[in-house]
Length: 76
Image (cartoon, helix red, strand yellow):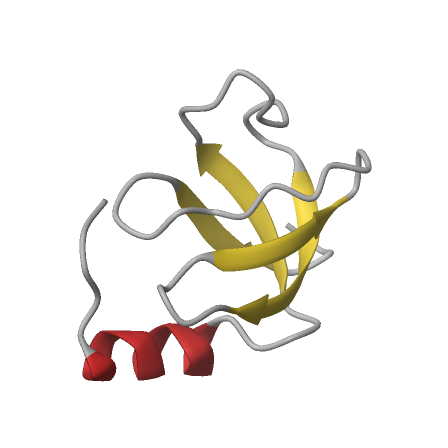
């Protein structure tokens, strides 16, 4: 796991504010939601993980430096 700088953490918190919609692009976890699953951000924790309520009911976070998601709008 990579360590996150204060500046990078602040940037994540500005980009992934609670309520923002995201789509999963990559997650290396056996229990990961399928790629393409969308969800709603509930926050970013102190180590930079993006906490998401996935539409399929999963609650796995997007790990900083390991997993990927992108911001989407409901029109995408």
